[in-house]
Image 1 (cartoon, rainbow, N blue to C red):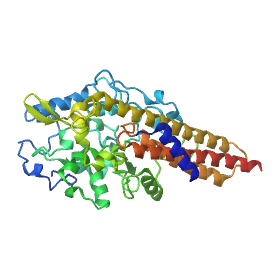
Image 2 (image 1 turned 90 degrees about the vertical axis):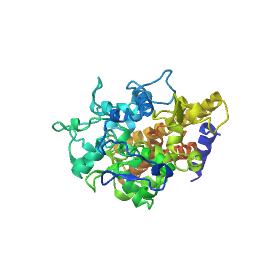
Image 3 (image 1 turned 30 degrees about the horizontal axis):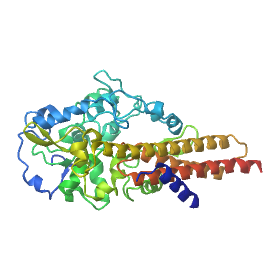
Image 4 (image 1 turned 180 degrees about the horizontal axis):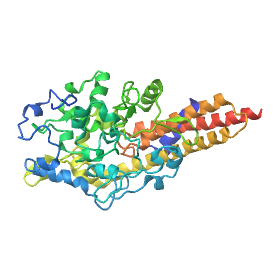
Length: 435
């Protein structure tokens, strides 16, 4: 325990910063929804182009998601498939034995999600899909998914993506209908995993306010999740015990779940996804009542119209609209503050990544030791599993720490501490064999 606080102190001092289908749900108490008017569009509309005539300014801002502006931000998405494995070589060791060790690129705009997974428009399919890949992997990649789940039921989660012409089931990337009812344009949740997770937590989405819905529509996908082998490999959010890394780790431990077997340690491992919603919980902005949309979809003037931007990008590209409505510092001061935070979180992430790589190497060495203490070795594997999951919860999140700097630094410090414990335990396992 004393060592953990030493690590936290070091990190803080050196790294810290001062209705259509059965699954659709909408907010019921928001005044904006009472003004919802018929659009004339069928409830099955998924093509974003169908919304263009009714909402031309919104559509134009949505299409900006295909653009990547120069100069590129230091910590942001990339138009080209820029490999993160080349930037952070230790990731290959951490993910040895699973597809992320083969390909892991910087995120691109939402309009690229189909191209980047199954190929198209001059893009090759990701190396992370193969014969065993189910349609589940397309859960957040296409506007057709909600209707496919409604039509196919649990077969959706068990059907192979590369069999027959199944890739053709997915025609449009993330679109208007993922977050809006096409008939009325009211906000709605279309992914059943979020509905079910909130229900288990006792906070049903039907009771959400309009402001809460402005985050929940994002939380359909910008979350940690897993494919539950106990329930037809359906998508589950591990929120039953809470939103902290330790809560989700406890849930996974209780479920006896692993995403993959590590190719070096042979331990069962977890792979975090993109837990923006979870890491945002408890942050200063979240506690002040802000939603994802307040910063990532700010109100903008488009000609004579004032719209909520549907260009889902870093607020660093829309500082005047996203930040200056509340903060009175200059644009440069705000940019410097963000980068100060992100640079130090990046430094902490690298330290945690290297600590977990060292744990892997120590376990590998212990495995080769004749007469190694098997019990201590298993304890080392368990500690490594936990430490790497904590690192991944911070690494896989897309804000490089800015969504919640305090939570990031605590999670990173825990990862470093636990990884070093794993390394020490592995050394002890090998040493016991020599005594």
